[in-house]
Image 1 (cartoon, helix red, strand yellow):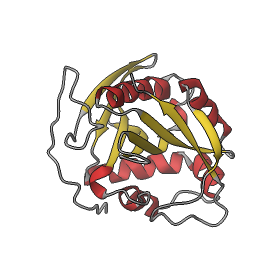
Image 2 (tube, rainbow, N blue to C red; image 1 turned 135 degrees about the horizontal axis):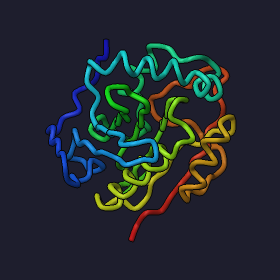
Image 3 (cartoon, rainbow, N blue to C red; image 1 turned 90 degrees about the horizontal axis):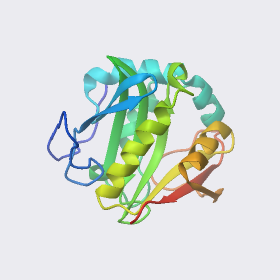
Length: 208
């Protein structure tokens, strides 16, 4: 069962028009419908307990990513770590989790932390797309919507994790305009798994 810390905030769900940015401290539960070449995709901020089976199914389908990056297949504990893993200095109030849905099926998940590594930034730790929906433009369409929301929410920088063992992820970030830096030192309360590959920080300036 999903057990998560109290994240606070309201559940301001907006439909049918552009919402206030979910990438700001006081807005949660926002829903977007994103047009893609494969049809409309829904992005929803805020995970509910009923989402656990769909997330576990997504993680199992993405074992290629988990094995490349963590050195092991996915496990149920990876779902719990979504809520509790934070960089040093961040709080649970700063955590944002987004599911990407094709109909009722969860086909992607994004983990972001606001205000890290500085107040005007957001750090993306996980951007996972199911194999069935890769190379269809879905990731790029969703990323562009969230980058626009971040910019309109007053952020000036977005960082992301980039792993040498997942070169397609690095290529994806470069295509979005990110610059990939040297391997970064681990930080925060997340415990690295044995065999886990070093991670680099990719950075994108989105300020006006």
